[in-house]
Amino acid sequence: MPMAPYEFLGLLNDYLMATGLRAKTKLVYDTESRVILGVHLVGSGVSELADEAAALAEFYATFDDLALVVHPHPTLSELFVELAEAALGRPTHVARL
Image 1 (cartoon, rainbow, N blue to C red):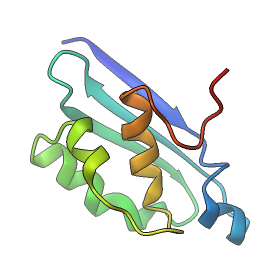
Image 2: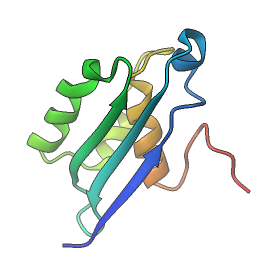
Image 3: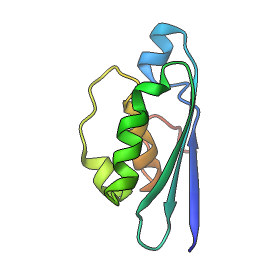
Image 4: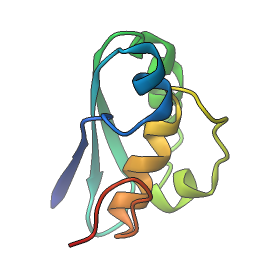
């Protein structure tokens, strides 16, 4: 099964910038089905995101599904949207060169 990770350091997340915290996230998904296989979370406060990460994998959510879910701003949970949008090739807070 081909897999692809996408990492986001979260440095541009408004919540992290406001609080001075740091986090690193990674979305692992099947490139053919686009199903999310897992999420890696490292940093301050990421335990708040463990339940959503578990639900994504348990219910075979795709990154297309995740990109449609509204996450409040500014919160740490916005990192999930960044990951999904990046997997779709249209990240909001990553510079396009």
